Length: 349
Image 1 (spheres, one colour):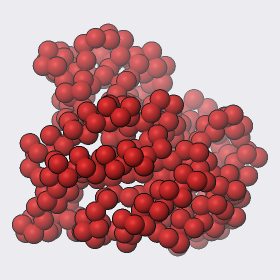
Image 2 (image 1 turned 45 degrees about the horizontal axis):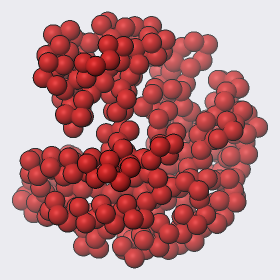
Image 3 (image 1 turned 90 degrees about the horizontal axis):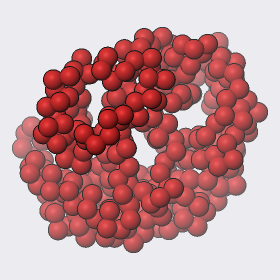
């Protein structure tokens, strides 16, 4: 598996040429099940192909089980300098309901251990869970702040078709907070994060100054990123043309393709300016700071006026959902951020 990852990296490195790498992210599924030797091999190969930024961020996603947490020392030695833990809840009953295999005790131990071996770390929590009250969420947040190390990802539970939750929800077997209570939880989250010096820098991400996830900022700022491994997605620019890439999803298919041809690229689609502009708006509006107009024009060759509908834009500004303060920036207000998807549907031409 490690040799296949290296082969696929070699393929893309030949395509894009030498670049400065600001971040590496081992994510998707359970990357912490990889051996530390494999992780080190990927990092070393990347350093052979590309220039590393002096403050490069190398993140590994991990589940807080005892076995995975015990490998933190090896991952640190391999070059990982940031870990992101999938905690999701600090309540054993809710963890079972969410289908998680770890306990709260394991989660707390993993958080403590991660901070012993990694200078930077993150863990996530989900709110608006089954039967959750605003007071119980407040208590959970206070516990999170007491343990956090500069960054928290706080997501609202969503019920999506095709998931086990959806069927149970349709049958009335899964009761989640109503929209008003969920909105109150969102407001509480933002207020408490601000009070604890963890301001929102993205719809669901909160960090102390300088602790923002550099890798996720790459997505939200619509910079290039190279995706290798089964099911990985990427956006790469070759000779001035930006391509959307997607690797074969099934691990066995991906591995066979790489062994046969050096990569398992299922999709490599050139993106026109309109698609790029729409993607940049969809990603960039997630950020609290929004999108700078000069950056937008430089990346896409279009203006905000070329891609958005003037009428809805003016109305949303008048209603306080879009910030009217900065004329050279497209930015949601605090009031608008919870309604991101609805706003995108209105403003994109």
